[in-house]
Image (cartoon, rainbow, N blue to C red; front, side):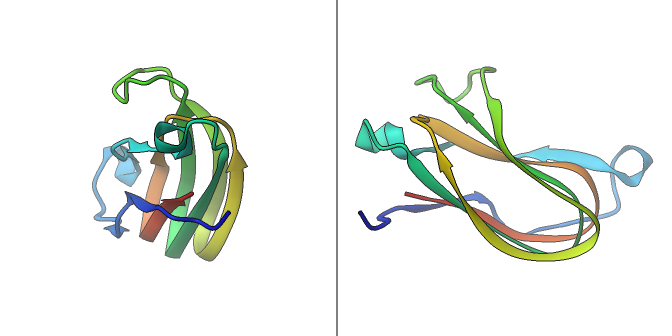
Length: 118
């Protein structure tokens, strides 16, 4: 089955030098994952692009029908500790209802995007 939906988990986000000790964390809004619309669909693709990025990108998911729940868990983590230029994708299997992205220990560069496709 070809991918039909692409959602932005994180738009272009540039480090602005703020935060405690010049490092900070951001969390995106939740987006409906494959199981939200397609019931038994369990394959999502995450596409991430960075420029001179220092930090960690975490993809979280929930099985809850409530996107504001605190029941998110980590399904993928990309560690980029030294000005990384990254262009990658990964498939994540799971009957997830919502997914979101987090930037942890953001200390420099640009997250060009984090996209969710299914």
